[in-house]
Length: 235
Length: 298
Ligand SMILES: Nc1ncnc2c1ncn2[C@@H]1O[C@H](COP(=O)(O)OP(=O)(O)OP(=O)(O)O)[C@@H](O)[C@H]1O
Ligand SMILES: [Mg+2]
Image 1 (cartoon, protein in one colour):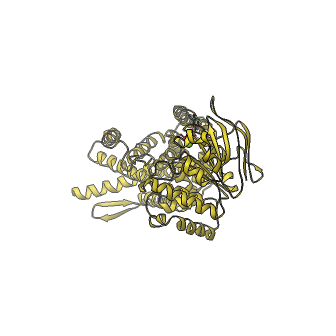
Image 2: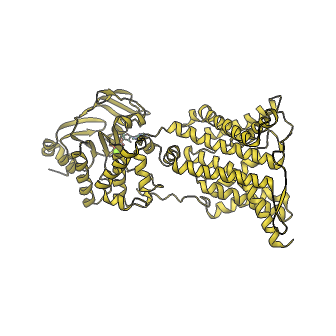
Image 3: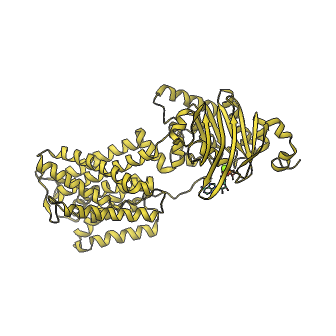
């Protein structure tokens, strides 16, 4: 479904992504793990059209989407839950969700999406009139995910949804990702919480300073000594 | 005439002048909100709006309302053009570059007016578009027809703006882009066209302000945008730059203060007082009256 081939991304002179190749099969959950500054966010931002690549190719459902403008990529069915949530803090929960369906003109379909989001996140329904800036961190994460669901994506990419959340909330968020996946959305998940991400995913990639250093079935990576040492807090 | 009547009269005059400042201030604040730029050429858009209105009325003999609409459309296009040509190429440049460009554009537009044969450097009498009549609201307190026109048009435009910003797709896109450009793009919002739309909206309001100002003052001249432009900028900062209700409140506050200072017999000092108020309010509340104290959850 998503194929990244030999991707190179620079920030000025900084060579942040150095030839990354990865693939997300339709219907799967793929995770990309790696330490701070490895380049995980950069890869996702390039997929969504927020950063330009210098070299390489990004393909989505057989179509070359390299360096397309971000709105066109949303239109094709990729929805991005960005690092740090990035909800519109000055707007209400409902307004945030409506913006998630910005490209849709079909009132009925927007209403359906809204009901779907509220079924995953009853908390958002309770808080629908509240200004997003006054939500708790966990609620903001739910809002960012709900907002991304509003466009009925085929592929949802999530950048560290567990960041800064208490363990119980992290488990809740992961359970919801699983629900969303069961409804037929393919998932690409970035995490520093490698243990949980690999437990959920079918396939995993390990990124180190802009390069994929390992990849394989998630269950195998979970057992790998190298991964254990570097990302799972010892053997 | 009692003191109470005098205060009421000055309040009416102040609100009328203030609504013109508010119309201009809205453009400053919306543009700042979306690209963090003080568009110092905005006062010139106000001036050009007045001139377009003048030509429509004198050359084509069209009624006031059509002149108003046409001038607003003209300036909306001018605003888009200005942004595309002058500011867009500088979007990722240091902020001072865009600021200098704005100042340069302002000088350019003024000089262009002087250079054009049918405009020139001397003032022109703005045609009388409305019979000046006086109504006594209460004893000794008067409302003139031109003030009613100003207030009426300003009110309608502000309500329309409120509707556009909160109820339409473009308005929602504007608010989203001004809060977080990247996140807005991830929603599928086209940032470039949203910025163009913001310039169009702000410039159209400035054009309306220019015509209303010309109706009240009866004269137009190439540099008429400088002082009102500066005052509107002060209004926007007073209200909290980036805030739409703030621009309206700031404009009103400045208009009322100016009239009060003049009425107290110190009309020489009215500009000085306007700027003194700015400094004072910013000392007390640096973000302006409606300014957000940026507190964000991380
Ligand atoms: N806007 C930028 N300008 C310059 N360098 C950048 C920029 N954004 C990221 N980088 C650099 O690119 C590299 C990859 O950053 P990136 O944010 O993609 O890492 P990450 O894996 O997401 O890290 P984290 O886990 O901390 O979120 C880092 O060395 C970072 O310093
Ligand atoms: Mg990151």
